[in-house]
Structures are given as structure tokens and as C-alpha cells.
Image (cartoon, rainbow, N blue to C red; front, top):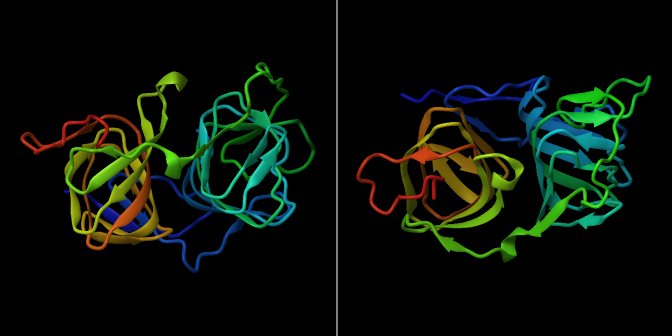
Length: 269
């Protein structure tokens, strides 16, 4: 049996086994230690630098100079951010690879759906460590690859829409982690009205944010701007009565029950 819980934010919520559903409506953002920036975690591991949740920027708020020690991905739900290489804009996804070094500013109020997979380094300072990035550390660093842009910015709605093999479910591959040394993917999923993803086993876990519409995870409703997080080894079904648009981070290969018709991909779809 899969355990389920609805979680509310705390200073350090952690990812649990089973299914976690988190709806941020009415929840207060936590001040992140930098002026004009707030975070609303779904889960967070400050030792490992892992984070899933929302990050808000007021107009002219700055992230501060920092270097990523793991992959970070952000969907721009409102506004945008600008660094020395240019801007990541509304409805784009920005991908920071390990070693990405930059300082980003929001020229208008902005909201990010963010996922971090490693600590972040800030230059040494006597000020309290900022919480903008989970796992923040003070350390001296250099940009060892200045020829590499600090962020890959993608218009995800323009990516090719692929047939998943599951009736009513389409996918757009946003990021395949293989070049970064990982066996996982970030996807945008389209669930047509009345579609159902058969039960699958998330061997290493998976996270979902409902961008539009609504879906049910193991029967639990998850509406737009809410999250569903699956711990490693969790079994789950996904269905949508009236359609849903999801952003998904699949941590590793998924297993389908033997004989599941059309469901042959090792990455859920």
C-alpha cells in the first residue's frame, strides 16, 4: 500500500516515502534572507541541497552571486530573471548545470517553480547565509568554464510533442540528464480529458507540478499550482477527468505491471 499525506510548509519540510500532495494556496512564503525573495518549500534537504517548491522575487530583487554544485531547474510562472547572459522569460524553463555561476535580478515581480539537486556556493561574507537556495554555503570559487552560459533557457511549449504510447498522454522532453551524468528526465506532460496513466513504480521517485487543469494521483485531487511528490519505490496512477498539463521530474526508470498495453518506455511515458 502507498502511504499518503497532505503536507504544510515548515522551515525544513522533508520528502517522505509514498505520495505527498502540497497545495500552496493560502500558505505564507518564508523570507529567504535576501531582500525581496521568499520561498515556499514542498520539501527541502539543506544537507544535500535538494529543494522543490516556489520562489518569489519582488521587483529589483537580486539572487546574489552564486555557483551551482548540482543541476537546478526553474519554470518561470510569472515575470522573469536576467543575468549576464540574458533573460529567462515567462513560461520558459531555465536549466543551471553544475558549475553555473551568475547573479540574477528580477525587473518585475516574478514567481518560479524551482527544483535544486545540489548545494549552492556564495562568496564568503559575515552576513547570515541566504536561504534562497537550499544547501547554501560560503566558499571561495571560480568560474572554471566562462565560455559556457550559466543557464539553458527553453521555450518548453515549442518542444516537439511526442506520443507516449499511453492513450491520451503526450510528452515533451525538456531535459535529459544523461549529458550531466544522471539517469533521469524533466518532462512536460499533456493529459487529455478522460485519460489515465496505468499504475507504475517510481523506482527512484518522481515530482510533479500541475501547471494547468487538474489531475488525480492515486485518487487524490491535485489542481493547478499544486504539487505531487513520489518517494522512491512508490506505486502510482495518474488520471484526469477534464485534462491537465504537468511538469514532471522523473528520477529514474519506472516499472509497469507486466502486460500493461502500450506502456513500454522506461521513463514513465
